Length: 132
Picture 1 (cartoon, rainbow, N blue to C red):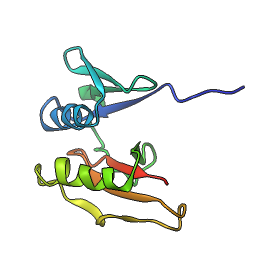
Picture 2 (tube, rainbow, N blue to C red):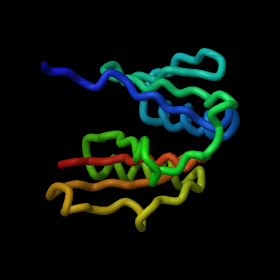
Picture 3 (cartoon, helix red, strand yellow):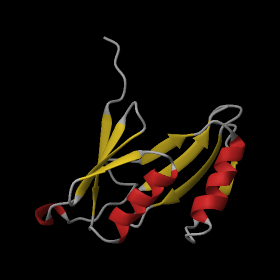
């Protein structure tokens, strides 16, 4: 049976900084945002992200990308230049520090893999990548 990715759900720690970060990031990446209180869906026309605030009974332990569960989310773009434009247009103006030394080639993945990694306010790792 062939399938495609339908959606990914992301639970955030609060309606404040983490929630605003994801709305801002997904808007910058040209996703359409459908708000609904402390939840929103963001779609690129093919798949979507369901972003919501974690219910109080499930706040502990805090998220960490190295624990079992979500490792990271990658957004694919059409060129290495677009990765650099993302760094200049989104990360730098918001003073978001890139992980692993910034945007660069990762030839061990595939020959033209060029990516930047960073974390959201809840430490969810995010990647913007050109795979060549």
